[in-house]
Length: 341
Ligand code: SF4
Ligand code: SF4
Image (cartoon, rainbow, N blue to C red; front, side, top):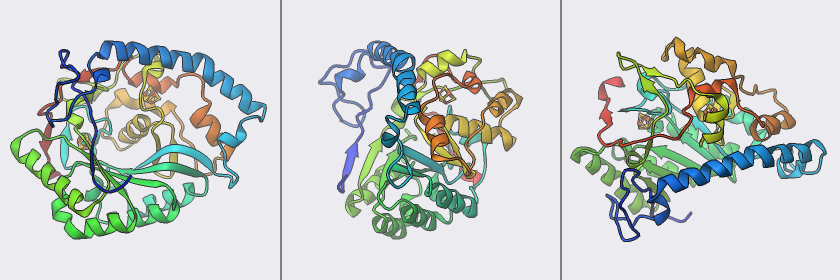
């Protein structure tokens, strides 16, 4: 991606009457495919059922026969991934309802040593096309520049993508721009606050990246928000009680491979729920996530391929996810959490 700001054209799920001439809140023309979500949902479901029932078993068969090994493992012995993510913080400076990282219920940063060890260890095993540094809010990590440089050192040719809600971009100023430039990193600027002050802060962050010619993609996240769990009377998150096959068939993020505590998870939702429960941030209802075992640093290339790409059935822990993709009107769901840090 070259420098400049790209607008992700996310449609608003609640707007059934949009047409190709309609504009979203950002003045960006909506695409027709975003207008009729019932069609999209059906098409996605058929595609996924087809994929799981036919393509995955076929891929597994071919892999077992040694015919497609090269499409997963490069000549350098590293497993090729489309995308890999790492979270630099567990907490966040915002509190968004339905945050899929559970950051409103978790606290703190991830230790620098843990993050460095994770990147160094797994860079000897996998090569992602895109490597994402997220949180919480990654810019809250005091060692963010060091961690970004480490990521570049580990994966010299990968696209490095930093996802931020933008609130700390202005306070970090030139130092942030410099390290992004030095590492050729890109930015995913995700908007959550919809009040006047929040939007002004976001706009200022966008301008900083635009002026510095840092490749930036703007995501109006709050206009298309997924609901992953419900809440009890005290406002604590409660997992779904789904049929694992049904959630597995519908799930979107099961290609968001995730590096947490030097272990490789096949999906970021699981990584967050497993760790959130272990930290005591999530209640007993989430204990069933512990049935999932992520890959240890000793995993071989073959084990990585089988775990990430060739699993043909659902995991019991998938019961925490909804059976259908549910969108909520997320406007005003985010609140400032300045006291959290
Ligand atoms: S900005 Fe909101 S959605 Fe993003 S990590 Fe923070 S609380 Fe979660
Ligand atoms: S826990 Fe299972 S259903 Fe949920 S996102 Fe991960 S792989 Fe998909």
